[in-house]
Image 1: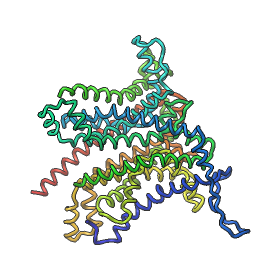
Image 2 (image 1 turned 180 degrees about the vertical axis):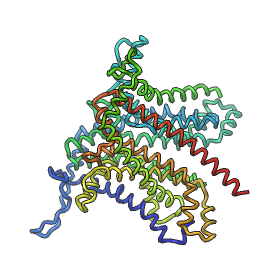
Image 3 (image 1 turned 45 degrees about the horizontal axis):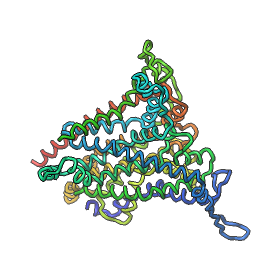
Image 4 (image 1 turned 45 degrees about the vertical axis):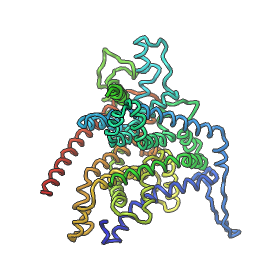
Length: 301
Length: 278
């Protein structure tokens, strides 16, 4: 390994990013965890200290408050919101896979000369504002929007459909925004497949459909899992898409979290919600990390 | 292949799905009507929304703040991300490697709203303990953006480094070059394309972010996405279409130019390597 001559330099190079991540990524979560156990306080900073030194008695007093978690876990409002968020994210992820898989497959099997162009077309929207791309759907889905006007003009419908502010609009928004995240890991996987396997299957009499379900699909599972995690995890906590396109009678957890934080200014409960959300997503996040590490290890060989 | 038509058809439908909303924004940005989605044929196309946009000091001011934050974020994220990528790809196993590895991939999938809350609570707590950073504004937004953008840069740099073996670096060390010299003369030029795409990606991530910025911003430091978000929540407005069109145009030009540039660089590097081998 390089730089073995200077252990000190190596330590220094490691310490800078490690310290940054510790201070700005690990410590914040500990603080959220701490505040989720504290009492709400109307004055700055909005939460009471967990530990207090009482001068008169000379004792350190800890005041832990579990009520925030009881609220989050028992209040049907929160429970319903969590379930709804997971449902929306799961359905959107499946839809994203159904749209993304054929696209990734088509790109991976296209001529190498067109492949880069197609990949660029997939990535290009990602470089333009996410917010504005979600906003574009308001204009398309509105009651007097582009889709309704077109369908009315063509005589397909005679009453405008209610598309905006529905579950459907949120699915469309999530699939639309996260599609590149589904396609890219799928493509990376599909592109590496050994096509002689399919030839062998065909020589042995398997139909293309059988070959697809028995060979291509099982081989592409790592890509499928990675793509689904990359869509599902952020979609559960999605905030912008449901606030612009979603229902007003059923909120997603991201919206509730933000309302609790800025509206009700109840930081302890908001912190408890964040911790529960994080625990809910911990398993998928760890799964994704394992996949990511394995990919980077594989790239080395 | 018999199913070729199916997958190519799906690809076309998928690409249409990706581009129709963007195209509709572009088209309607030239529409005269205030009703965003009804085409006012006699008076269109028009540039009136572009004119109105350029007169909107609030949006222009927010755009300038966003550019400054994004540029600082991109530069900071590239420095930190390069160090982290170097550590993970080249330093071999060491104590705490798992921690650094986990901390660099976690922000990639962490829901932004959780990162936003965690960052805000950190800044509030820091201000209480050590009085820094005093209040919230551009500095806190930049710090938060660097933290999540550096994860992306780390992954890019790490996979670029994994693509090269370290024989060139080893050779230079054997010939007596100092590690720092090796880094600046060999490693850095090799990973330059990764640094450029990392910088651009970090810039875009920062320029695009509304959720984290909303949590850690203060009075007078509204970024462009924050301004857009508060407008868009009140409904569609034609000048936002004009703004979107300008942003799409800039990105399209930028991506095409950088792709051409990188391709030329790649080719030149390949040629130089070839010559060095002969």
